Every structure is written in C-alpha cells, then in structure tokens.
Length: 554
Image: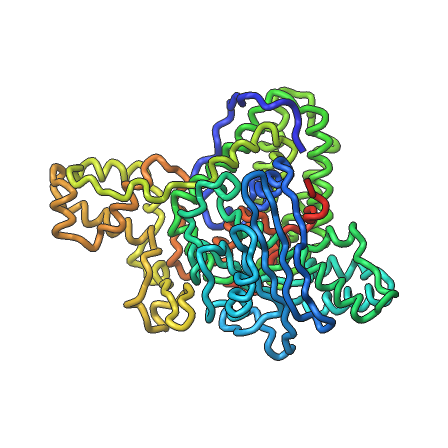
C-alpha cells in the first residue's frame, strides 16, 4: 500500500539515536515491517511480473517423491527442487543433529536438467552429509506440524475445510529447521550472486526458497488428501490457505551473525530508522494513509490476540503488546488529530510517552506500512560491502584512535568487566556440528575456543592498553607490541561513521538473553508469531498472510 507520488522526502525529525535503538531489550522487541526482506522480495516479484509454474510432480500416494517449482523473472529463472519423504514419527526432530526430515529442498540457479535432478536426489535428502554445487543457491529441510498437517489432510480428504481455529493455533503445515546459503555445503558463494538486482538485498535467495516451500507444503497436503479421499477430496480454501505460513525453528546458530556483520547491521538499522524519520517528518496525513494505518492496526491487534506462547518472557511481552495496541487504538480514535501539522510525529511522540518498548516498535512498523512511496526506496540500501575498511592505517597516532573511541564507544563506560557476572558467558563453536554455542565461563570448559564476539569487553581492553601509550605513537608500533588487539582495532576503525553498527550492550553478561538478538534478525527477515521456547531458541512463521505464487502470476 502506497500513498502519494514519490518525491524526495524532507526530513525534519532526526532518526533515533544508537543509544536508544541498539540496546538488546529494544532489539528484542522488534517487529516485521515493509522493509523486511520477505516483503522486499514479494514487491519485486509483483512489480517485475515474475511467472511461476510447478513443472514437475512425481509424488506417490504415500507422499514420497520429488517436485520442481519454477520462478521466472525478466532476466533469470530459479527453480526449487523439493523432495518429499516418508518419515517415521520417532525420527522427526527439529534439532540440528537430526539426520532425516519430512521434506528437503534446494534452490537451483536456472532450470535443473535430468542429470541435475539425479545428482540432487542423491545429495539433498542427506543435507549436511551430502554436497550440492555452485549451481545451487540454498539447501534446506522441513518437518511437518504433525497435528495440523493430519487435521488438514483428513478434513480435505473428507470433503470439508479444516477448522480455522486449528490453523490459527499453529500457523503452518511445515517448519524449516535450516535454510543454508552463501557457500555452505557447496552452494554458490554470496559474492557470485550479490550483483544480481533480484538478489542484492539480504537473504533474497533464502526468502525465495521459503516462499516456494510454502506452496509445496499446501500441494503435498492436498495431494495426500486426494490419495486418501479420492473424488470426495477438496482443495484448501484460498482464504484459509493465506493464513498458513512456513514455520521455522531457530537457535543460537543465528545469534552471532549480527555481531560478525556490523556493517550490514548498520545498514539495516539505518534504513529502518530513516524510514521512521521520513514518516514522522511528513507535514500532513493523506486520507488513504490514515485508512491504511487503521487497517494495519486492526490486523496487528487481531494477530496479537491469536498469538499464543508458553514462554514466560514472551507471555509478558504479548500482554504488553495487546494492552499497548488497545491504548493506541483508543488514542487514535478519540484524541489524535490527523489534520494537525506533522500528525505522524505527534502520534509517535505520544507512543514514546505511553507505550512499552514492545508497543513502540510495533508502532514503528504501523507508521511506515502505509507509506511505501516514502520509504520503499530504502530497501536498495540494505546490503553492504563488508570488505570495506579492512586495512589498518599504521601511521595513525594513538591520540587519534583515542578520539575515535571517545566518540564512538563512550557507551562502554556502563560496564565493569572486573565484575565476574559481566564476563560470565563465552561463545564457542561446537566440534560436532560446527554451530555456535554459549558456555558459562565458571562452570564449563572450552574457553580456549572462545570466539571474539565480546566486543564491549575487547574494545575496553584495547582502550586500557592505549592508555599506557604515548599520544604520538603510531598504531603500527603499538600493534607490533600488542598484536592481541588487532581485531578490535580493525573493527573500531572500519566502523567509523556507522552509528548503528554495534550492539550497545554486553553479550557476555550473565543476564544477557540471546533471544533478543534472534528476534532482531528475524524481524528483519519478516518473521511473525515470535514464540521462544527458551532464551536460546524460538519458533516463528514466515509469509503468513502473504500471497502464493499462483496469486502473483505475471
């Protein structure tokens, strides 16, 4: 939804500061929005009139076989190759150590040949134990939500539609347990595809994979319903189908990404905060935008009411969100003057004064939703050249580096790393699965394998070391004596001028919740129904409420 013609925005309101935005509690309250990656993908597919076709369906009555889904754009074609398996219940697991799944997938660059299909048939079902090629852009797998999948198949087989309450309680027929890309297990490296317009924005190949997987999950349920019910079977109602997404189970493996890709994080946050500032700066509220805001608010309220969680932290957040949205609706209905100057800014300032962080971040998403003409161009700046700034200028003086630290890392003064609780955690990579893990420094072994993710601590150590040096000492001489600080020094220099690059909290602290980092990244993906099962893993839904390929055919 967009209002007005695109004009160069006049921004009178400054974006929020990093000290507000880059705290874990607020990052852990992020909501999906129109700049989220899956929304960026769907807009491009629609605007460029991509065409979609299921070109192969070789699946037997037990639901075993393979299928191919083709996405054809103006310049390139991509194909999802799907493999359906007959998985015994006792082998179904969302853990990374699983060795079998209900379905496995690969996204192929182009159209797979018969030889490609045979090669993929021998490797994709094995996942990590197999290998794909640079012709593939992603490797993924999914498991059924057994109760809902069975309910849908049984109802359709009997000629009836599934219970909407059952669909809303779960929200997906299958959930992915991994979607690998960017060179993993032989897939094409990011550098090989990053210049393609349709893949320039982050995670577009992965989002395309999941969107096509969503179509497969409905197709396989309808196929099994026909196999069971014969001529009596019916297809899933389109309105009910829209209420299904693709679930995902995500754990600690995703958390270090935002620390390791600070330039990318800065660009994501900059785009979002710029979008908010542009909307707040609008001199007036177009009637169509007000109508679309109301529609988005009502949709958010309905979603918050239908969302269920068993995790204490999320239960409290849901209560805050529901209360905040009710207060927001009442305020907009009875007090907000949409005809006053800069009405969106007035509404935002009210939200800052009266809503929790959860409600404020949802309000951000609601404010930019009706303003595509004002904000959608910002999706062109979500990617980043992460090789920039790698070289260290050894001629720089210690005095200059101290000035940079004083300007960009003053927030470190909040921490006392002599306090054991503030360095209680350490991040490492497991030998078995090469996945990130989080250990307790005082209770577990393995500190010698600690990953350099404690940025706040490490930059503090750098600052302490610099305090012992002469101001005119060049960095080259300092690094010859103290090479252990090279990684921190390089990071500080590379991130100059990038205000949102650092998480301004201590992720080694005993009270740190990894789930906050996960939610921030997943919100940028476009995830809904954020449902933590602990402070280290979460279930979410992707593409729920969005169109299917056959609804967007060019």
